[in-house]
Image (cartoon, rainbow over all chains, first blue to last red):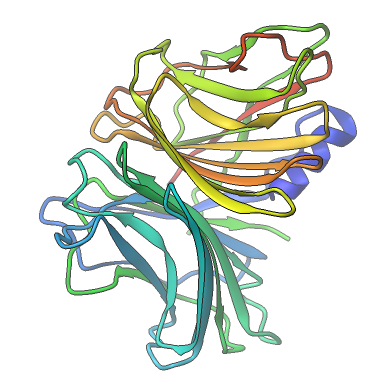
Length: 189
Length: 162
């Protein structure tokens, strides 16, 4: 999508046709928080999906908390993921195979100021194609004025099934806090 | 089911002459904003920076990582007077600024930036404006106070969640 937009800008200087991007569903986390955010009954009529979110968790032993993504309720060891990370002073890279989920960026915790929410944009490519494994990419992070992390992640689900549901949760039994917000969009091909 | 098309172009500016800043002040009612920039500096290499609602106080912070072809590194901006959209030269480049949930009045505002400069670096930034006010304007300028060059483009889009 961004590539298309940029091409439109560079090529003609005229905004591109933008009726190819549609809002599908939104989750607003209410009082008391939630253990996970799910999108279900996702129609297979788009080419790609995008999730845009802001969130924080109630973790209280680290500044950041991993968000994790699974598809179609599958929590078996069918995922792999990699990421690049910057923490303000150094960069690092981590990857793991045969995982039960895809690590998908980090968001701030209760140790960061109450109004600080991390941001993540997740692209799920060819999610309905039954001839290939599914891949995702995400950009996200948080900043707490003196602490923070920026992540660029990739993930793979080794299944040819169309993705019809997506679950986002944190890396433990903690809750995603009130005012967290996630929106699912479909991009036509 | 889908609520309808979004990712709506709000405003576009292509500089016909050198100019010190570009302001978007009619942001509409969307969930997120995306600004796609192709800035070119006119005098000397510097950062493209941006501020919200005319606030030039030390209310901005950011964490970034970049690779310049030989080195990967990370840096942080603490209690700054602006956010960084990327190092700006005479090279062809794109800076994409995503302003998340800009209209809410509960959270500090989070921003994601990706910069691709063909001659210097690829960079990703997460930024924060420590203010719960809804964002009503965004102004882009150069850190060193010089002008954007002719041909620089700035396009604002709005995305509306269902």
